[in-house]
Every structure is written in C-alpha cells, then in structure tokens.
Image 1 (cartoon, rainbow, N blue to C red):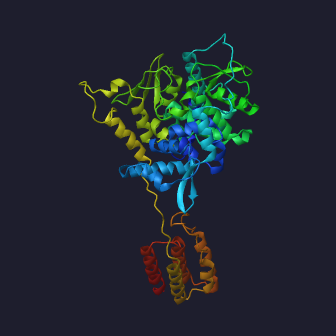
Image 2 (image 1 turned 60 degrees about the horizontal axis):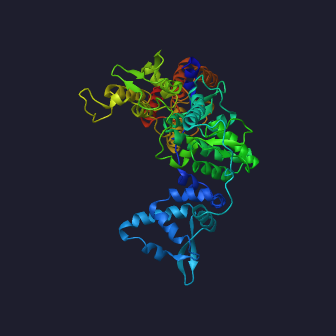
Image 3 (image 1 turned 90 degrees about the vertical axis):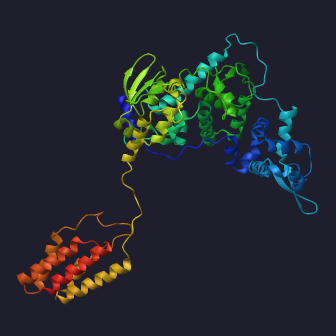
Length: 527
C-alpha cells in the first residue's frame, strides 16, 4: 500500500453505522405513491411476493382471486391462536408494503383487499400474459459466447475496481465518475478537507466487510436514490434489476425493444460488473452472478472466482499477520490497520502495531471492526487449537485482541460530560457583595464600573479563556490613585484587590467564590 494512501487515511471522517436494508426494508422507506408505481411491473410484484413471510404469502394467494373485501375476522380465523404473533407480523408487513388495504364492508365491518395494481400484475407473473419483457427477444447463437467462469471473473474484476478505489489502492483504473458520485452520496467516502481527494469513511470500512451480494445491493440502493438526477425512473430501473435477477446465468439476452433510458442504465450496470457486453452498441448482453444474487442477498454465496476472498489470515501472538492471498484488494484492506513488511507472490506479512491501529482509529475504524475482520477472514487452521480440538472462544490470540482494545481505550481517557454553568442569580448577588465590600474600602465607583466584565455566554466554563491580563489591574489602580490623591499605600492595596478580582472568573465553583469573598474582606478591612 502506498504512502499516499496511508496518509489519506489519517483524514477520515467518521460516519454513522452502516445499515444494509433488504428489499422489504427498502420499499418500506419509500412513499406509497412510489410503491403504487412500482407495482405496475410484474417482476417487482413477484419479487415482493417471494420475500414475504410464509403466512403473508398464504393470505395473498387466498385473496388473489377474490374481487371483494374479506372481513378481517375471517382472515384472523385462518390462523390458529398459537401463531398469533406470526399472524400479526404478516398483517403488519402486508400493510407496510401496501400489498393490501383496508376496505369497508356493508354493515360497518373492517375488511382487507389486495391492492388492484399488485393483484393484477402478480396474476400476470404467476399465470402468464401481459407484455413481454424488454429483453425477451430471440437471438441468433452468439459466435463468441461467454461461459460462466468468464462471467464470474469479469464481474469480480469490475466490482473490485470499486473496492480498490475505496481503499486507496493504485489499481483504480476503470472506475467511472458515476461510481465515485454514488460512493460519496452513500457516505462510504468523503472529500478530504485539504486536497479534496476521496477518502474512505467508517461506513466505507463496514461496507468492505459485507459480502459481495450485500455490497452490490447497498450500492444499487443509493444509485436508485440518485436516478432522478440522471433523468431515469427509479421504479423502471428497479424493475429491470429484478428482471435480471430472474434470468439464467450464462445466457445472452437482446437489447431490442429497450428504451433509451434503459440502454443508459444498462451501460451503468456494465461498468459495475452486473452485465457483460462486448461493445456498447452490441445487441446482446450477459447477466452476471452479481445481478442474479440481488434476490438472494441473505444467503447468496460469494463469486466462485473470488480466490482467497475468505480464510486467508493467520494472526500470531507476536502480533504478526500472515495473509495467504494474491489479491491486491485483500492486501490493501490488510494495510488499513497493519504495517506491511513483506510481500511475496502468494503471501503478505504484516504486524499489528500501536501506530497502525491508532492510525486506523483516527480514520474512524473501531477496534471491534478490526477484530471482526480478522475473525471473518481467519485461515481454517486458526479454527483449531494446538491439540486439534476446536477453540471454545475466539480463534484469535486473546493477548492481541485485548491489546487492540486497550489501544482504542487510550483515545477515550477523557470523558466529556455536560458542563454546569454557575447560577446567574448567585453571580449577581456575589458581585453586589463585592461592590459593597469595595465601597466600604472607599474605592471609587468608577473603578468598579470599569472593572465589571461582560457576562459570559452559557456553556463557557472556567478556564476556557485563561486568566485576564494583569495590565488591566494596573490601569484601574492608576485611575483610582488619581481619584484619591495618589496615596501609594492605599493604591497598592487596591491594586492587589483588583488583580485578585481580575484573576477570578465570572463562572466559578462555589468554593472559589467563598474564598474570593474572604480574600476581599480581609484585604479591604485591613485598610
């Protein structure tokens, strides 16, 4: 990893915890108007139906061919009271997704009825009919057909371009400006305050720890949020994505019949590695495994071509880390929190040091994220103890894990608590007492008027601005000497009193206020 990339990581800005929403959570966050538009596409209706809970799917099928509202009491009777919680969850999910709606029944009974657009297009997706998909045109056999292994390698290469850019690796050629804008919009990267370059954030590091299908789905969610800026319909783009998810891996599809907006969207998917197309104007394309795994985010397996993506790290008790990988991306990720000392064709050696961990902590990466990454990518040999048995606790050396947490705790020595400002009423009483004491010592009122400081704003605690300069006390004492005949002895004592006042602050703990009154009383009475 280059020195420039390491220096950039010092300027990382922490961001909120990353949340990867599934399809239902994403749709619940959108407006009902967007959902109504979305349910005009049969592929979306089928995808939503497949992701529903089992009871919710049961309700949908029973209501699919009913043309009138069904009383809610009847729907409740379909499920035993033993599964009341599951029934409540299913009903809530269907309502939040606007799959069904409340409809009144003659007689005042509440009822349920499927949304018309959802019911119509779900029938189309299950029974057939309707318009043909935009990519369903027949094609002649491709003379340069691509097999599954080639598509997996292509998808991995294109997607790793995005990940290389995030970690600051030198292999960032090929990444598009659209991908960079999406990373910035998603909060995975941010602009450096000094040179304006893009640097990874805490959410970006969490993004790197996700599985590849989850990374792609989260990336596409933020793409859809910015689709309107590209004059694209988010609903149309999402429908096309789910058309790709229902396609067959290794089969080519035609671009005939696709609108200009969808052709532009297809080129963006080509840049991200979701489809393969030899040329921009080629009339066919191949969906890759990244596109097919959109519907299987929770249980999708990683790309078969991703060699060394898991189980390649060995951590020793001497803080050395051995990464048995030839992937430049994995090496760059390891360099975020270790000092790389050796690099060989199939192995890299690094050391977890205090400085490397503190550098990662300054970048917003937490100790738990580092530990989780080491555990997630631990070599299979780390899962076994020296005697051949399975470790009961973490597979990482406990001394190293504890030390990483201790290095993080060094940055949390100071606990910031909410400050308490001295009561304004008591401060006014205090200064009235000071005024009486000074007047009792025959100090001219002009001295007090000149001295009285401007009240501090709320929240400013004592010591924030430092003590007042002593030269101010000398100036006031000179003015008092001019008003009282220039008695050196009285002037010197008044100067001491004024300097004591100037060193105190308007907002002080009660104990210091008591000492201040005692000091003033002793000095003035002694005159």
